[in-house]
Length: 126
Length: 388
Image 1: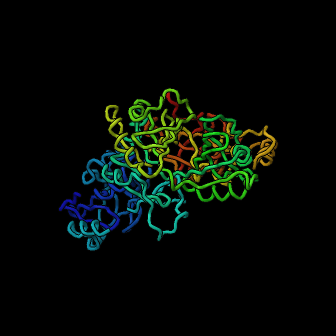
Image 2 (image 1 turned 180 degrees about the vertical axis):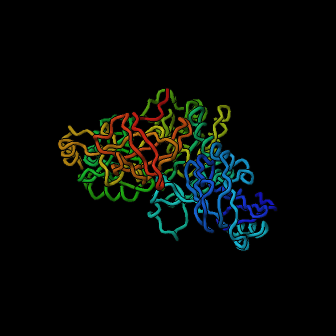
Image 3 (image 1 turned 60 degrees about the vertical axis):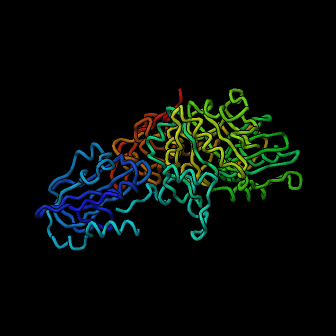
């Protein structure tokens, strides 16, 4: 299972890649495997403001539905129309098929996230 | 990112089996083909107490394989109930809504109803001989159906019902190359078995099989009942026989999307104790002219008063409707979605749902409430898929 070293991870199987005060968020390899073939993606609007753990989107496979939660609080600065138009990108390259970028209002939210090593162990145990 | 079922009432998958039939502490039951599923990369799930593959490599590819070539399904969880006695046909005709006007070697689909017209189950009656019938029922309903049949058997002492579910494994071979695949494995002339007929025979060295030209996919194909002992041999034999046609094993996920494209009802989703066959669009399997069967009076009354709601086919714009989502017309709730998915073959968001009779005509425009957001839907003439 692929767990890139440049990301942090939530217990809900989101990944977060940090660049300054911008957090890019997607779902992990483990999550897309559990979900199966993704056929529908819905994300937030640019400018929406979220608290930590708010629902920011929905991902559906043929047989299952999953909500996406933001592990960090802040304002959405960008969404990925490419993934909405091409949902299978989440299966093909989950760590490139990001869903949203957030300008973090509370960077200490990141402290609650797991390192790649911790996340890998979390998946293996879970 | 919690992954949950699209519907409101089921775990993991909105499929055939409710979860309540098996205590959570009970070990999962395995079919004779379990090892093959695991070896083929099947993702195994708890399906009503059975450990079965929801998919192998991928649901969409499996679905398309059945539509374009041929697929192999493990449906050993299905229930089998034997009916024996000189008056077996009379007993079954008392219990089910269809006429069971079939001869030796023939089969018939029928709903089985409560007195109020609600559906106990939908099933297939296979007539072996006049005094020997085999009834295939939904896995989740097996115990309930058997108890219902025994309790309502009008010829107690003359006709005997036996739950043979533990004695039979079952595979389905479905798709345009099903006959060519299976013919390699049996001396029975499959071309002589017409749709909804069956024959006894040996398949892949497994004796005592029943080969039926039935299915739950909208394709031509067969369902083979096998004695559990020795059944395992058929799986690799079918895989090998079908290799030249592109056969792959197919999981329960694609089984559900295939049946939905073909507008075949799923008990627990589209039909249940609160729906009648007239509402569900399976009146063709109800013979109200017969003098008696359980539920007849209620259905006659419903027909006379006007069937209040109907199960319709819908296509949905932009979003995927799921079991339990409400249907609206002019802002008012008018019905409910019973099944819905993104259909892999017809490539549309499709659904089944109950709407008032007045809103059931093809072309009627409705909306679906998909988790708080409205999507446009239109009633279409079913099925979504019909083989050429």
